[in-house]
Image 1 (cartoon, rainbow, N blue to C red):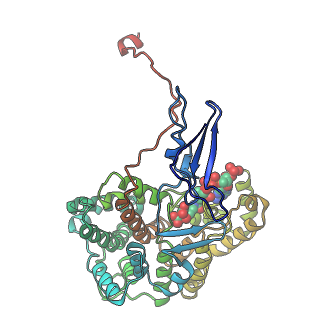
Image 2 (tube, rainbow, N blue to C red):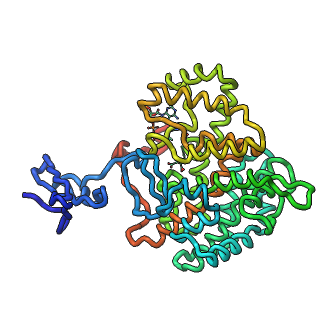
Image 3 (cartoon, rainbow, N blue to C red):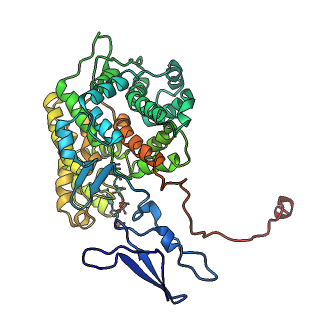
Length: 443
Ligand code: SDX
């Protein structure tokens, strides 16, 4: 007897039924599971059960093959190396747009009119200041506190200054918090850097654009106005655009998972910052620079590659869960690197990076594992040329990623399909043990 787990299953234009026919050999029952948008619902698999066993679950560590949501924010084709924000190819946005226009596109779902853009830029510009108590809070960190730890804590602390942000069902309130977070991340990121340097914190300059203002808050000293080279400002804008979103990556998954409890957006973004901090994710750009410094020279690259192949090393900045040929952002970043090096001089570590890339792209170990440079492989070289220390590299990832995290969070809180994240497990521990009191156990 075939039990259909859905009342009707679609058919494609060849008339083939868009279903899986599953036979449970434990019971002899057969199930027709609908295939929709290239996926089946885990709930339909959960209907496959026996009299003694509960419905089947799907075991997928790291969610390698699990769709957690339906999203219209970012499209990636890993095989073809395609990345689009709201349908616009990343190559066109990187060449022709600005970070704040891309942030508007991600958050609102379409490109802004002139009035919408001007209003958006004005709102962001005039919300870059943070409460003075946040400055005092940040001064409590040790001199050598990692900037990502400071950013993580400061954004979490921000939630206490805007208690109204917990009203996540109010659209105007959501908009206000989105503006505040996008506006304040550069200020908090720059202050984390200044703290590490033992320098006075620089307040935002509302005459400057988003990327230029960030550079000024990083590097301004006694001069009245800090005006960075336009080529460096543009390169940073491009890097911000490239890092703005990347569909359901580890940190976005963290934002969505924490956001599913209906907590405020500051707390949800704090979860994203924490996930991005990890060396397998956003922390990879810092790890790449440390790896290049450890290799030290081109002639030591073959020895390092051998270390990777025998499992003693990991080639940081290489590999990706989705991109199995190349990360389109890495190609664009290499061009941005050339523009920056025109101003700053070539980063000596570039030669080591290029030799690593040359060998890895020819070597069977990397080719069979489809490992190629990802977004983090070259970005650190640019940041270092901008005089940003490695500890700050992931902060420069978190700042632009905030608009992507928030676009995904907005989708989450308005998606009727979503509910609080609470996955199942496969229990492997002992069962029904008898507790013996310490007085008995310790005799
Ligand atoms: C980002 O998801 C995103 O979109 C993330 C991101 C974004 O914009 O949000 O794109 C940003 O995080 C980019 C990735 C930055 N991380 C790194 O560069 C760290 C180094 N890369 C890896 O650790 C790894 O490639 C991941 C974490 C990026 C992807 O890991 P997967 O998909 O879980 O792949 P895997 O670990 O299962 O690796 C498959 C095989 C394994 O070999 P075997 O065990 O099968 O023999 O490839 C090997 C791995 O050991 N491998 C590597 C490697 N990456 C994978 N071997 C050496 N060096 C590497 N970098």
